[in-house]
Amino acid sequence: MNLPTIALIALALGTILGVTLGVPLGRRVERVAWHADAALTRARTTGWLLRDLAGYATATAGTVAVAVFVVWALAR
Image 1 (cartoon, rainbow, N blue to C red):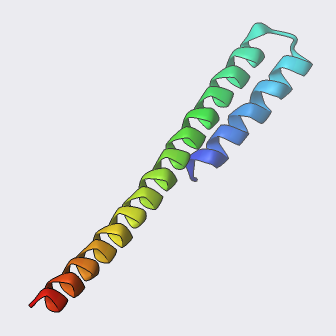
Image 2 (cartoon, rainbow, N blue to C red):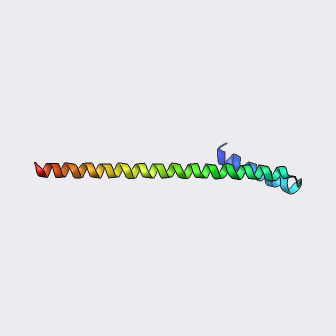
Image 3 (cartoon, rainbow, N blue to C red):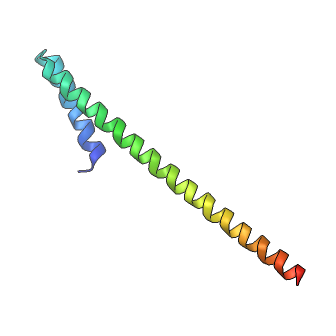
């Protein structure tokens, strides 16, 4: 099972425990699952951001390299 599935199962379990038993344990499990899901979302978003920034940096470096080569070739 992957982490989002476990987080959703914990969220559902916490909701069921909270509704049926009326104990604070249900809310605690639900809260932990919510924080785990939020942390996973932040990590995923950060990974996407880093991937996009790396792609932009690579494209910029390639563009600068081509421009420098063209200027060098024309100046020769």
